[in-house]
Image (cartoon, rainbow, N blue to C red; front, side, top):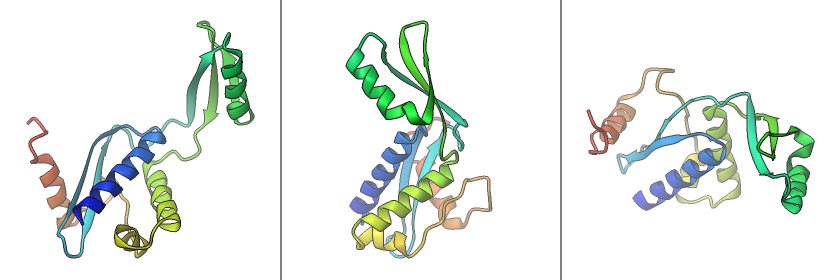
Amino acid sequence: MWGQLKRKLTSISKMLSNSRFEIIKKFCFTDEEKHAVFIFMIEFANLPKISINRGPEVYLKAETDSYIKKRGGNSIMIWTDSMRIVSIEETKLISIKENASLIIKKDVDSGSHTGIASDLKNGFSIYLGNEKKLNSFVVTAINHMIDDGEFIR
């Protein structure tokens, strides 16, 4: 079970990073019977409402054309003083809760329905640490993450 949990943790973490969330630390914990938890320590729970994407230098014609074709319909394009193209776009999903929920739902819908995916299909909860009282299992998992020797007190 630990191997499946670690792979799912890494997969979700990569997708959150691709969505521009800064993952400071990730951790999984299980009682090996009924419960498992993924914990992500993140820089911010919400992304800015707009994103700025740096493109190629404008003299690289093929790369610039490709960048404009890919991003042009959804963004405002500008040329910077450093001769790069930059696109300014509205962020589609701002909160980490929305992003994580979408990532897990897509994974459950598209993947194997055995192991962890099957368990996730049966239900999962996503919440920020300050939103509600954490149950004792989650508190235990957080304590294990903190006590693993990687934090300096």
